[in-house]
Image 1 (tube, one colour):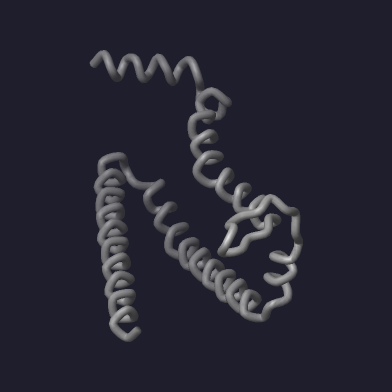
Image 2: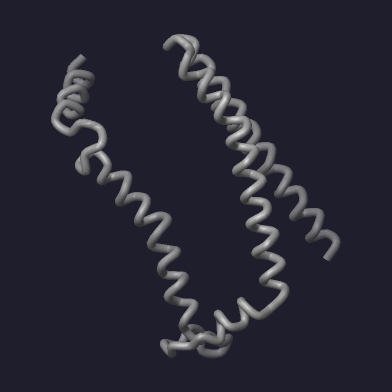
Length: 142
């Protein structure tokens, strides 16, 4: 009972939408997503070779190679096409589901969310196992 009272008092002090309630999530996002992307971009302007590793020399040859090579163009196109397809499928499946869940009562909403999360976890495990099997099959071929 005390914990729920403390949580409700904490919510009363920092209502949703204020910086103090969103700051921890923002810092986590910056540390896990944005910082590695920025570090990768900065490293892409450095020279690298297998004998000396990363050298602190500003070069544009890495970007020139990526933008002019047809292999990279094909990989980027495949990646964006797959990302677009996955996004479209997510919206097509998720929007009606979210609408239905929003209209449900609290008890049914909790039950349905539990079923959905369980199914998503099973799907994730299955996809992971399938990728592992594909990698092992490829290693046997090589």
